[in-house]
Image 1: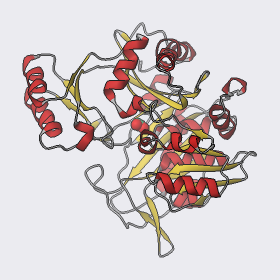
Image 2: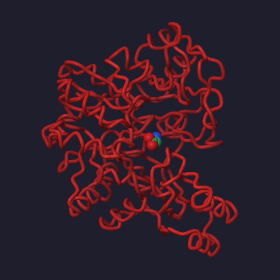
Image 3: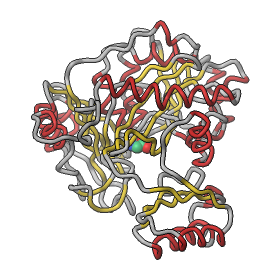
Length: 438
Ligand code: GLY
């Protein structure tokens, strides 16, 4: 099979790395890829947003399956374009991708399916949004730009002043461009978050093992939000019963509600769940693999990801058996100086081979580049180091041992990734509210 992976981050390196283990893979391309994917695939210098050039390339190279990593080309309709030209794609079409591309669309589909989520109000005008935030007392309040805003469109406002600012950022300063033409104000939910990635073929939906990620830059969940500073898989306390319930009450109704609208969902559906005192609710949907969840989920997969993706693209997931290794996985992200406000480029990275040589460790590249024969930083999130271990304590120890071998100027690492998973496994901490039937 000739495979094209679209994207160039840590998630795409993880996909390429898994595909490279598959006996089904004859040739793997990655567009545009990164320094890590270059070692396992043929990087192609085409941006993930350049739809016509991607189509020309895939047609010319007779690509059998295209797997789309990031949300932007999905929302822009890359799947539709490829399918119109007879090319098989793992990734939802433009309409299905509105689950991530429009918060309002996602809320409406959830309402159709009777799926539990935070209460919200929709606004198209400054005046109505300001009236809303002035008139309510249920702070903190979430203000979200409706469209895709490169991960920056969700603002948690602790009081009315912050909510007014968020509304102005959207409608007056236009900080999110067209993504902020509509906003929603949403009930702030508290609880423990779980990322459930589900493979879908338009009919059958098969969950992958659940994961948790760490969004804040500093230890103890302090500081600004990032794209994700680490993750672990599976999630102690969110066991098969909880996965089955999430499929029954969240994923299946959403896929069915889409189908009623004439929309078939094929690809991975990322359900961002929160377990509250009042049960499991949906925080968000993404229409792609999570980053850095993918880097913690895939090392545990004991069956062929490429076979699963091809089966999903062809509507044949029913015959695919997804298998898991018994080990736990911990992923630690290494970020560059200044992240998340900015990123520092050109800092030389050392120790990559020593880290990767450790048993059970994989080093995934994200923001790296080759400069004069050396690997240097080239983005905010630079690397993700994943380690498998017999139990979370062993996986965590190995992950940080590997991280300790890598160095670059200004390297930022959270020291507490998966600490809570270790404690939960040891019975010292409940990740979920008492009475949650995980
Ligand atoms: N880890 C969050 C995301 O991929 O959106």
